[in-house]
Image 1 (cartoon, one colour):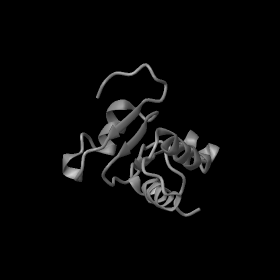
Image 2: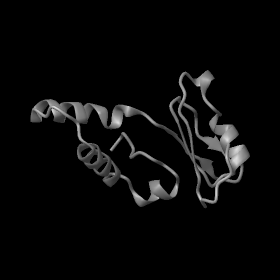
Image 3: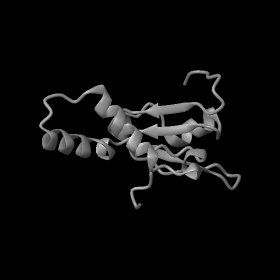
Image 4: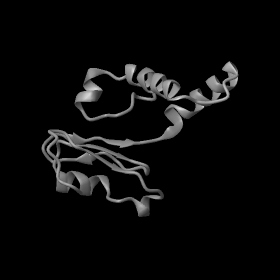
Length: 113
């Protein structure tokens, strides 16, 4: 892991499968501290930080955007997916986030909403 000047650095361990991940969620919180945002391409459980706090683990998954982008492209008859389309999809997804989720280091809105 690299040193960061950010007050809340992000660590993205994106390799799959789990045994190829750059680090585990527990290792990230142990070595970088509790004030990080952690996401991985593999599933990890949230981390008990031992002080009544939970280190939230985000599984970075393309299921949030790819189905809608694909369907929208098909229905619109677009021949290309532009940067603007991806930006609009990302902004739409972000609009579903609550302030509490953002403060807790959660990157994606709850799928249960």
